[in-house]
Image (cartoon, rainbow, N blue to C red; front, side):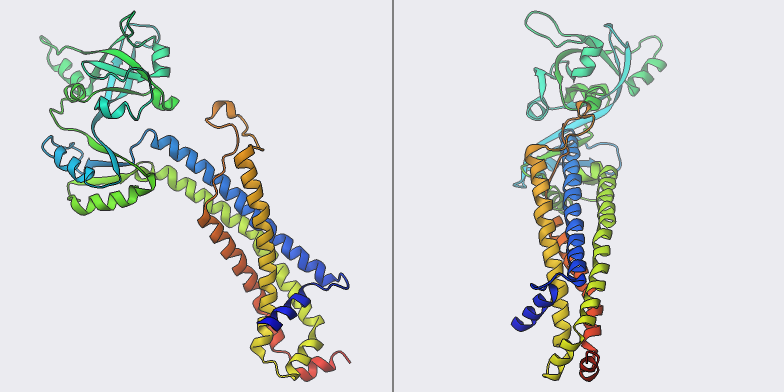
Amino acid sequence: MGYRLLIARRYLASRRQVSLISVLTGISIAGVALGVMSLIVVLSVMNGFFDIVRDLLVSLDPHVRIESVHGGGIAAAEVPVLTSAATALPQVEEVAAYVEGKALLMHEGQGESNRVVIVRGVDPDTYKRVVPARGSFGVDGRGVVIGLGLGERLGLMPRTDQRPGGQIALLSAAGIGQMLTRFFAPPALEQFEVRGHFMLEPTYDNTHVFIGLPDAQRLFHTREAVTGIELRLDDLNQAAATQRALQAVLDPARYRVQTWYDLQKSLYDVMRLEKWGASIVLILITIVAAFNIVGSLSMVVIEKRRDIGVLKAMGMRRREIRRIFLLEGALIGALGTGIGFLLGLSLALAQQHFALVPLFGAESFVIDAYPVSIHVLDLVIIGTVSSGLCLLAALYPAHRASRLLPARAVQAHR
């Protein structure tokens, strides 16, 4: 390997003069470096956006959710069994049952008088550690917590020591049906007092309200059944393992276990498709550089025909000649990939720590600069693909060099 590597290095760049071959080799190295740098920067930015969206959605969605396959909810007798199965896993930190449905919100304050919202009945002791709220997260005893934006727009302020909270009424679809059928004794409206405002995400805040679990069961006429059971883990990346563990002990014909990825699968799939689509486009830069490697190494073969003939006459076999030019392609790939890694990681880390490139229109978004997240797996794939393309590009010139006949190679330079 030592003498083959020495010959490959001498063929790659001559110390004495700068030839056309050296220029083409430099262009090939620059092309590989540009492709690697572009891939690292673009994929790191796309990873950053993915992490931002994921963290935002996971603040609203659970890490793992257990639901009934048939959509009728989970009976009260089944809840302790499912809760025990979940809490038996060491990575599970919080387990909470919930009831969810749509209802008509009615009030007598300012703004819209009636509004359809998504009502979620929860255990306050569990959710007050997850949902940031202004005021108290008091959903017990006919209390309701609404989004900050919705509360300010409707003029519904939470209860304080100096004043009572805003009053609203919630009417579910089942309640509307009873009102239409019971003309002489319509059911009373479910009245609630605003105890606090929560702050998660503007769209979510304007469409969701929280009430106590018993109040939600009464509002939606579910008796003691719940819509599902939500789990919070100590590590988000353990969601898939938790899903497999629960599916192994739960009846798949009765229960469906979903991870945070499954809950927003279409959105996450589109973002991953965009990431790998951009990768394929940027790999074209490296492919173009690989074509330059074919040209530059082919010219090296032509220029060094006499040297190749002498080496063969001295007893060097074809596979050793082939390895010399494969090593030269590997050196070009290593230099280009190394320079691209240095530049790409430097730019990505600079953006990550110093926010060099601001995000246009950041005043309406949750971040003010392009986010960056560097994944080791992406770096491994980029390095492997780049080096592999350079080696593939060297195959034809290496094969051509190994096929040269010693006598003709030497005679061609007389």
